[in-house]
Length: 67
Image (tube, rainbow, N blue to C red):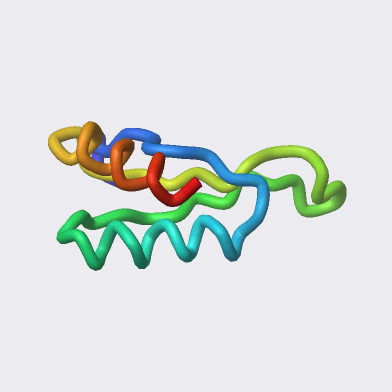
């Protein structure tokens, strides 16, 4: 991943992170998911959605509405 990408939000479930990426894409924001869940113990770790730093404020606003 390029260095100008930042975490917009973390989720506990992968399908919610995938929905977030689709919602961001519908609003013209490129986003990627990084799964940091432990492979042995699925209760540890998060699934993070990353966006470009220039889109962070808009992405946080959109994702806030998703909650």
